[in-house]
Image (tube, rainbow, N blue to C red):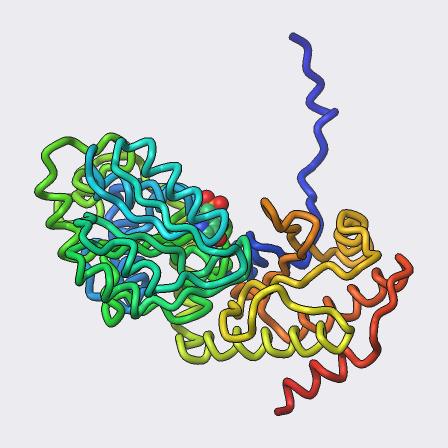
Length: 394
Ligand SMILES: *Cc1c(COP(=O)(O)O)cnc(C)c1O
């Protein structure tokens, strides 16, 4: 077959302002780290970097859990890793669903031959712990699973009550922290989380490709006392842990340069400090909401249940969803997300994740949205930037 190499362009994606549901803007330091020479996955220098990466991850997850590692794969690989390692055929598993990612959990649990109890909640609202308590009364689930930050709706579900309810029922508590980690407190140990996974491309501001996970001693005990082998060879933590732990036994080749990037992203988080980072996410969120409301638009989620890093804005009457997002990208280089499932065409998802959570992006987005809406003939209120400025000077 003839192929003309000249017909393939030089790589030049240009720059964007990534304000969607992920990936988020990646700082130059992370990209630079990723371009360091690729060395062997058993090279002593790399083994030391693995140890440091685990140390930094424990700091971020706020845990002493020994098994705290980045799974090779995106957030969904971490999700699958947690379920395949902890669930055996016939196990009772409770999944709380209030969006796309809770639904994805039920898909995985179904494939594992477990007995699934699916508890559905309104999309756009938090999971109600009392409803979970009464639904599992008299049951003996092995696992209760919930999404901390539902990226499909912009909802935060508090974890404390659910953790207690799960443990009172004798179950392990599994949490999706893909979007919350590094943007708000996850606090694995104080909240009694037994299994947690995240992703690199949301508030960590690293390219997609790794999924940090952490398993508690109770989760490891469940893994060690399985009667059947883990159905996924690649994600079997009883083997993977020997590579990240003492033995350094080859399992699969670590994605070396991705781990350089993650380590750099984690160093940036540690330099900023967790409290300061969470406060920055909250402040930029408040400024964005102030501006959105000044324009006369409204948020989907009630104030007390909103996420700081993912803002769902109701699409105003008369606005063309696809056209607005297209113009934001073309004219301003800004990427935002559309709605998913029942929320398609009804909301925009505006991310303020990690490096992208900045006053610069908030002001740019408010000005850009106003321009694009006005060009499309939608009436919007004045004073969005003034409202944001007031939020910053408060
Ligand atoms: C993005 C996301 C995932 C899936 O992660 P991928 O990296 O796309 O595989 C899972 N859960 C939540 C809450 C997410 O936001």
